[in-house]
Image (cartoon, rainbow, N blue to C red):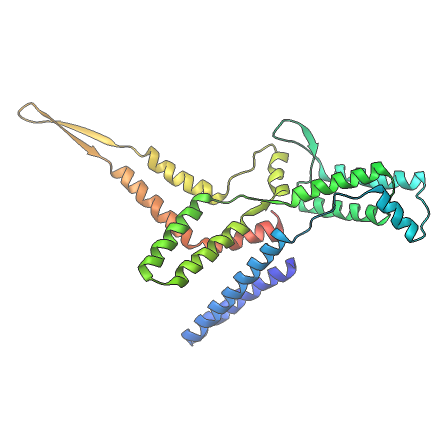
Length: 290
């Protein structure tokens, strides 16, 4: 699925470049719009699948279940050496994951790389295939799968401010154009951005592994910086003594108004390119996991 998605993005880009080089402007516009729609629909479908129907590993295995399965297949009971070997394989997962210090200050083992998640999934699958009817092994399998499920679950790590701005922009344009398609496009774009910004926990934990807190999204930091600039913009007061001895005070808020104008314009531009931001977040959070 990952290779298919990357292929789709690349092929869509090629089609758009081909369409733009066409002498028939109307035909090229149709091709660009059609390929863009296909791209966004496929991306949305992939994210919905990963979010709601993705991997969810069992955490309710029992020793009795494995024992019954071995008897049904006519397999002999595992020897102590085989049990120790399987236990050693599960212990390797801690080494693959590595230790981090969590927010409570405790040192724990947790995956913070996609490769570590994939390796541990393969190890657990191999141990489960052996059908160990040892209670301690089964408990360890369930514990590891519980951590894997948590590491692969996602949290929104995008900008709530840009969503609010996009909603306002969509409503204003919808009212000005009186076109339902404009509002529908913004609703789809916002939903696409929200899904694309849902980051797996193991990617956020990676920041803790490096001794840093999980960062806010780039958009959040940009918008925060823009409006912090408005808040910190200076207001100048100039006092002038008139010939009759009275004082006249002039207040210059031009710096604040200019900062506000820049913040609003940049925020609207960011809201306008939200589909592109969503695609970038999708590639990062669903394909390359970095």
